[in-house]
Length: 91
Image (cartoon, rainbow, N blue to C red; front, top):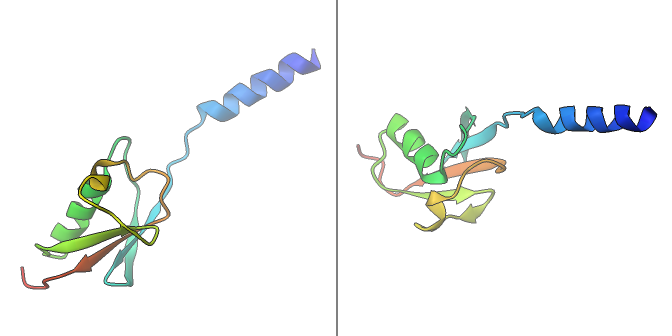
């Protein structure tokens, strides 16, 4: 009976989903945190941050690594930070 109890508690742990916050940075300065929704891509989150700060042209770094155009379609979930570098500050 103890084995069945362990298996039941293990299945409960995997069913619980914890939303993970991602640190948002703009030109190296922290601007807050974002909580990506299920399936939200790196590009979607970056565009949201850029619009909030009225940026048109920017580069993206996720966990310190530059994101390419192809990489922007990947989900942000699992990352610890997203950083936007403004190339042009005029909106």
